[in-house]
Image (cartoon, rainbow, N blue to C red; front, side, top):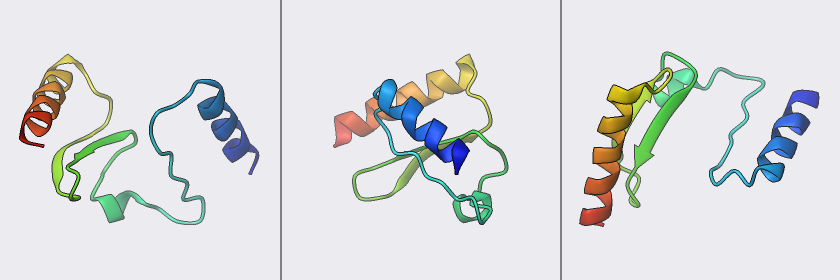
Length: 76
């Protein structure tokens, strides 16, 4: 509970623009087919997974993510 309070406070104070999910009683990795934390996902408006990466995003993955975002925006 204390960690959750700290995370929520940080998100509020820094105006974090995305959802933060908590799963303290379970392991959410299998649900998302992730093998690491952090994990990054890009979904379309209809819920289709467009891009994913397990682990820290390095410049190579960032370029790939940027390309996927641009493509999604142009199609959407």
